Length: 173
Image (tube, rainbow, N blue to C red):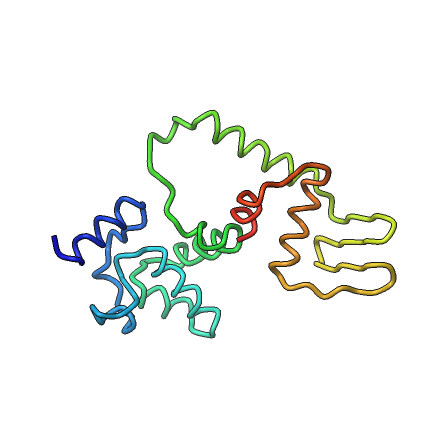
């Protein structure tokens, strides 16, 4: 089996095989010897998001990366913002009405966390405004990167509970 077919098989087993690699028109993906592989849907979505973040129009990006609607871009952007690269991995398909008990439990926990997290958090030395993304320690504002703020939000939403490293990585990155 040649390396190209093996790579497609590996991508398929991981659930990241792009169903329409021929639709990817971006020049980075045109060279067979390139790092970029149009058959890897995670890589294609990430590059599309990166291009828009660097100023390319959404319409130009979706055309260059083989998507047919803006909805594809917005879904990818939300998934990436919420879960990092892991969010760009397509969900496994299955019967629509057969949601596992584990999935229901996880969704319920996420809903409970979101509901219980107020718009602000105030303690003796720390104030966090989750809506405006402002953090104050004592009387000073604290500058946080978006990722640092997301990490802080997640930890505050799970206050008093140990958060395993892997869970934290999946939730924030």
